[in-house]
Length: 408
Ligand SMILES: Cc1ncc(COP(=O)(O)O)c(C=O)c1O
Image 1 (cartoon, helix red, strand yellow):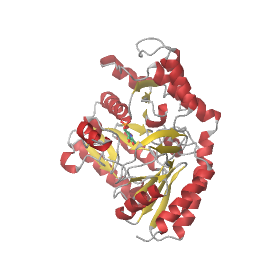
Image 2 (image 1 turned 60 degrees about the vertical axis):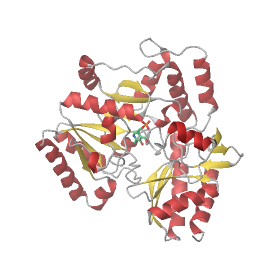
Image 3 (image 1 turned 90 degrees about the vertical axis):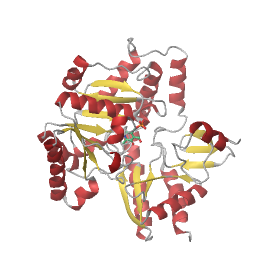
Image 4 (image 1 turned 180 degrees about the horizontal axis):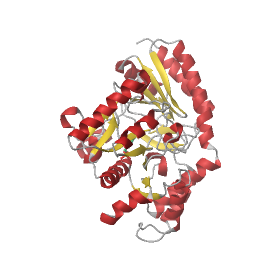
């Protein structure tokens, strides 16, 4: 049996491949992925290797720590405390308690538990095509995957930036009605949660006032606000460390994941003492692997690297250059409907899902990896490691130009 058959036999088919001919990647180097034939691909997709694949400083930090000690957060350990201090130092005053876990799904699951416990309400307001994870509760908050037939009554869907930009008043009055409906059914919203680059909703930088208005709305129902920074965090969107900071709001709960350990499983929930205490008094929280010393070493190395290399400003300047070049390309190609995003998180909206899928495969032939997202799956997702440079953007632009101008 070949690798593909063996994979199918023992992993099943829960997780689909990105490409018709699946890639067999054996090595990663900064913004490059190398397959088993030695072919190099420019990685314009993988945000988890945030500061570059196999980043030597992360590798060094985790290997030294693994060779020394790996326990859990029931012991005192300097690194996890330092990590909590460094993370909370980047957020507004009040957000100073961290819970550590291993995935974005666990983080969002805990965030909803905290909100439900604090508000004694059950519902949750979620944007229409969001993805927040895969636990049985968080799956419900992920309409991208959880279709209407499986959706429970406590989930209320509100428009994302597209609806807000189309008609702000309507967006707010529709969202208000959704919250009212939940309340009438005895499931008033415990929280409003948003991914602050709206990746699965089609990739949008936070429109001015969107979060402010939605935060006011849910707070008027005594609900809390959850900033899901699993995709938008750690400087990716440029200018700020966190996506919510683009709209100058202060959430009650922030969740982190993906880039946090540069590939090492590390995620977190950050909230206030008041919210945490109300929860801890009743339940407490422990996660065997979450925030262990090796994970903490990875997290510290990531933050250090971001600051040492000015990667937030870098994401802003390279991202702006990349986006401008793409906008220019879009103006000469009628297959592209829109170019959006912020920093090094850019979406190219194609006319159709088919055109997006074709472009994805053609880009693969050009040695360029991108993703596909959005309500109709017609947005190409460009979200490379944030060490991505102008010269890489130029390679990507040439590839995209070629892939999109080829005759079908
Ligand atoms: C915005 C957002 N939140 C949460 C998650 C869940 O994270 P994980 O896959 O680490 O459980 C994802 C994963 O894609 C995500 O995109």
